[in-house]
Length: 310
Image 1: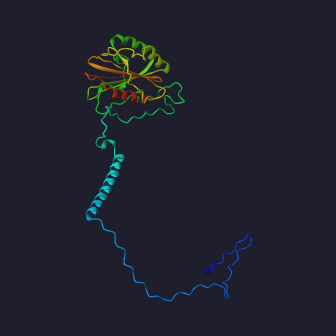
Image 2: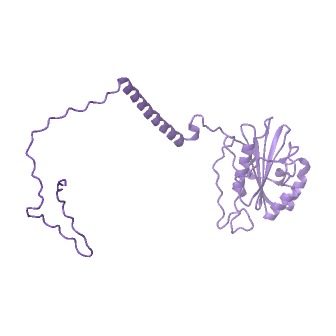
Image 3: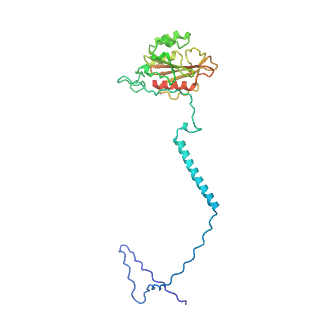
């Protein structure tokens, strides 16, 4: 048989039993049969140092310069892209070249605020005001003129008479409108007018009646709704403004918006009626010339006046 060489004895592993505690390692055998660790070898002279491994061939200097140039380019482009993205997201849209938004023609109205009410008086459409009555001064509910406007000396934002109001209609309708206002017990009429630099004239009239029922009766008697009712001077016919979306109109109010279709005369007329509780508003705009009356500032004026009445 081939002689087997005994391997050095391994450290004895302590036995683990449950629930007995871990046994202590047995002491090293002391008899002659125990395997002892070999004695350390005698000191030997130091081995000579091996020569270092040959270095990898260095890339040509042209390759290093190209890599460096591309690395710098990537860093610069990355920084430029991040800076550009930050500039676009943080800047105003009109500050970014190519993304400037041109004016859509809206007028620069002053900041609007509702007027103060008498002590204890509710807003027209609050829960405590079932009659939907406007308790604020009617003149304070008139839309102010926008920036750059020339005020109308006859419509300054104060009270006007019934005769002055009915003059807005064709002469053939004035007597009927005046009689209707008398029967509907109109309490107050306030008006404001102005002219913009492009020649667009605006007139806003507010009529307050004794109750919501009287205001609605005036609307129904003048056939306001699917038609514009009584004709205005210079407007041979009026059609519903199909571009009107009613955006910004206050709940519980109704708006009827009309425009004179082509071919119109010397000036295109746009008009709108607003019914808000006990108050009816009439907004009229016109501008001479072939271009017609701008639609966007007219809709803007109607919306803002409606918000003041709500």
